[in-house]
Image (tube, one colour):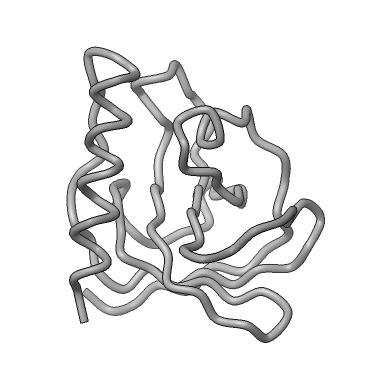
Length: 121
């Protein structure tokens, strides 16, 4: 897969990532992103600083989502990103987006995704 670059202003989401222990920065992806829905190893850049990250592109079927968006969890970042310009590069798809039976199952999978991504080089 060729890396896919997405730029935009971080918008408020439903704060579900924060509740799951993986806060995310949200960018609208309504028809603008030429990538398949799924979970990606990524990197994000904010104010000239680059962070390793994991991103979900899609509609969040486990929590009743319907608007396609890009949600990115930046490793090692603390603070608020709302209203700030951010660039995300999706560089490796690690799995398809899917519906989980429970929030606990989703949380466990996200933790596994993070562990896997951190081992990639």
